[in-house]
Image (cartoon, rainbow, N blue to C red):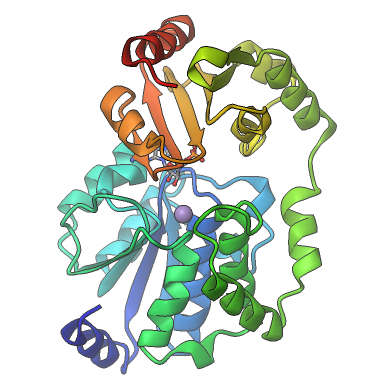
Length: 336
Ligand code: 5GP
Ligand code: MN
């Protein structure tokens, strides 16, 4: 942020205001963690604050402090609309294009005449915000949020609840501190968060050790359906709607499955294709290691985007056609 932005926000936050904080649709640990982290800080400054999520969030992050207070736009349209209409400022966290809030909430936000503040770490931000805090060198929005709070001299308001939310986003987006953007600074921030009272083993347990039996069986199905394309250093898998139904799929159950492809020796591109009959589309996740830019790949071929090594997209063709398209692109572009 430049000095004007810092001055504006410092002055704005001096007196009580109504503030909305929004994560992207299908919020993950970083999206909901950053929203609730900021929420806990702003609440202590006596603002009226609410996190407004486009849709429901998965169970594995539902324990975050005050996640039960989050409003859900696609479930409770009227309350959300009233709150947004009455807000003086709207934060959008962990996304940088309004359509990432989904069709319903995205088109509502396009028409909402309120000042926006974007805090995000994805590439190519849109220009909707009055203040854009966008930095792709950060591994998580939560880490960037910590820096943002420091810049506004608000770090003393990071209490244990805020710290727990921020820690959660850093852990989930860094693959438990192993992805390339994990720096010494990341660890120094994490150390401070633990000093603020984050119960780190408990958080890891709540995030990663609460799988259901069915969730593991679904993982097993995806692993059995894994296909390796050794000539292209790629591996992909898929889950049909029938697979999901058979194991009583719950939101969040497929989180992380895509990464298994990368654990095969010599593979630097992994993908998963997940059929969603209700939404009439195939949701795709891509992961890579090294130089292969999956953000570019997802943008060019699968209506998506994200980061260099982690991106997502969607397809409105059938599952078979989508997988075939993926294979064909790899063969035609001779990706190795
Ligand atoms: P995931 O595969 O876990 O859904 O997403 C990986 C990364 O790509 C996340 O940072 C996510 O925000 C981003 N992403 C996922 N799907 C999409 C999409 O359809 N469009 C864009 N622009 N980004 C996406
Ligand atoms: Mn993120």
